Length: 315
Image (cartoon, rainbow, N blue to C red; front, side, top):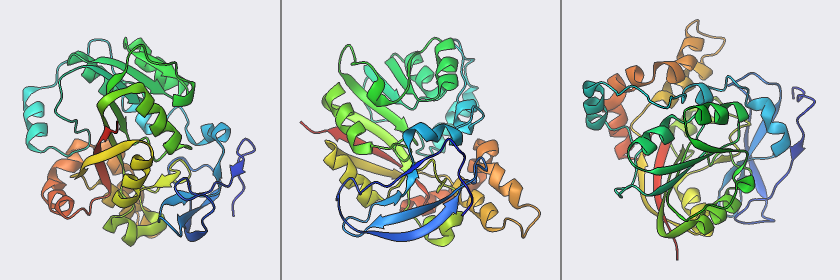
């Protein structure tokens, strides 16, 4: 195994759903996103099947894997007065809804975005009439969001202040796979939300065909920043134990993971492999649109690599 950076320490943690249960090794992999040294194992709980990175970097050592040029920080920059999107783009996105940021049908109220990065999505909600607050671990990304006029707490959800009033909606796009304590976070969000509040989140789908085909080469594996690797079944179980009941699961109509996974699998064997790996982050809509018909078919049978979930707060 390659050495870890000096600032990184590893910790072993039991399955949060079944503490004390034995773990079965599944695979090992490395940081392909930033190239930081270290090799990490993915294990499966022998009781509930929840996949986890174990051992994993402690929370204090994770900064090594989240540099300021981390793509979600740069790709979500916004301004206090963002220019309106062209009408054709708005119509195209409605027609080709990828289910990546799909929200429940409810009127504007109080919303919390967990992991708001540099604030682009939260800015859009505020512009639509929502009273929005963000929480972001990265100090540089949080500062970008504040410069755009947003109210954002820097740090983890556990260090955030109590809200002035309960939330009607919590959103968390590609966040829960990064959390050291997803159950604790869900219980805290439950306490901060009104009865019947909604939670909209997205995570990679480790129950997909992509995961089975590509294993350690899977683009959405992203070790070690992804600490949990959910399937629809295990995500339902974690949400339920945290006080949230799943209402609907949308399999995202995007195939960026598939393209990036092919690049990882061909690494060192094809001259265009690196270009394939870069495409999901750089091409965006121009990559999703031509692949949309195939992505729609695969999403219909639950076999794309990402899912968006709506859940409601239990009483």
